[in-house]
Amino acid sequence: MFYLNAGGVVVQLCDSHRKSWYRQMSDSINAQCEGFDKNILEQTPDVIISDYNSLDEIDKQEAVSQSYSIREGIFVDATKGIAYRYNSSKQLEYWHDMSHEFSIPFLLQLLFLSRDCSFVHSAGITYNGKAYIFPAFGGVGKTLLISELMKHEGVKLLGDDLTIIDANGFARSYARPLCLYEHHRDAFSDTFKKLKIRYFGPTIFWKILRRLYMFFKYKLNISIPHLGPYMGINSDYVLVSPDKIYGANKIEKGKVLVGKIIVLRRKAEAVSVQVNPFELDELIRFSSNVTIHEWKPFIPGLIAAGALLGCEFPDYINNTRININSAFEKCSNISVLDIPEIINLEDYFGTVKKIIGIQ
Image (cartoon, rainbow, N blue to C red; front, side, top):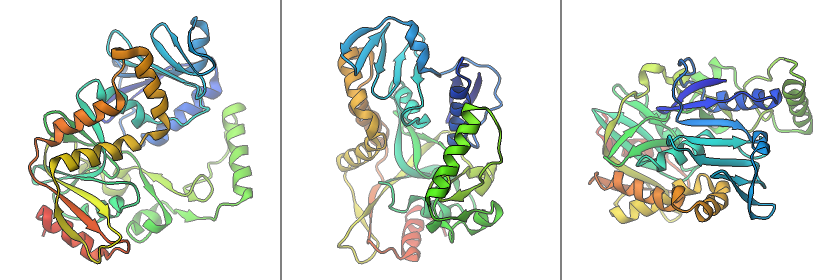
C-alpha cells in the first residue's frame, strides 16, 4: 500500500493478493505521477484504488447482462474490468483489473466533478500573480508554447496539457510528466541530451522485447534492466517530469486567479497567427468539449453509471460544463489564437508573449 499527492489529491493504492497486479499498478501510477510527492505519510485518501478481483466477494444485482451491474452501490463495467463509487465519506473508490486503460487524471476528474472543480484540457502558466490558460485540442502546439514561455523570468508552470480550475475562478497546477516526441527534440534539446533520449523506429523486435520485459517483471517478479528512455521501444514518446526539465522552483505551488484565457485553434485558411475575440459561451462550449473528449473511452460507462445510479453519481458531461462555466465566467479577458497549419514559431511565440506582457 502506498500514498501519493497528485494535484492536491491524496491517492491510495491498496494491497492485493495478486502481486503482479500490484506491481503493474504501482509502475503505472509512478509513471503517470513522476514528480508528484510520493513520500507523504499515511493520510485520509481522496481516491482509493483496489484490485477488481476483490469485487468477486460482493453479490451483484444484475443491471445489463454481461455488461453493467450494481454491487452495494458500486457501478461495475464488466466489459472493461473497472468499477467505482463515491462512498459515504465522499471518497472515490475505484477498482481496476489492468485489462483496460488506466488513467489517474480520469479518476481525479471524477473526484473534481463532485467538488466544484474540473480539469481543463489546456496548457497553463502563472506570471505576475495571474494565471494564463490555453485551452486546445492535442497537437496544436501547447507543449512547444510552454517550452518557450518557461524560459522567461517569473513564469511558472501550471501544466502543459491539463490545468485544474475551481468555481471561484482560481487555477492550480497539475504538473504531470510531459510527453516528449521526436519533434520536440529541438525545443527540449538540453533535456534530450541530459537523459540520453534516443529514437528507435518501432519494429517487431521491440514489441517482442517489451512483452518479455513485462512478463518477467509482472508475472515472475524477476527484475531485468530497464529499456531506458527510448522512443519506439516503449512507445512513440517518453515521459519526463517537469521538475527534471525546469526545476522544482518553476512549478506553481499555489492557487492563482485566472487572468486571461487564450484558446489555441488551428485554422486551415489562416496565413499568419491572428488574435480574435471569443465570446464566453463559445469559450465554455469549446473548453468543455475538448476536456470531455480527453477521456472519451470512458464516456459510455459513465453515462451508464449516471443512468443506473442516478443522482448518486455526477453527470460527467453536464458537470464538466457547469464547473468550467463557473470558473471561466469570472474572467473577462478572453480571446482565441487562430494558428495556420504550418506554424511560424517566432510569430506564434511572439504573439502569445505580447498578449501576456512578457518582454
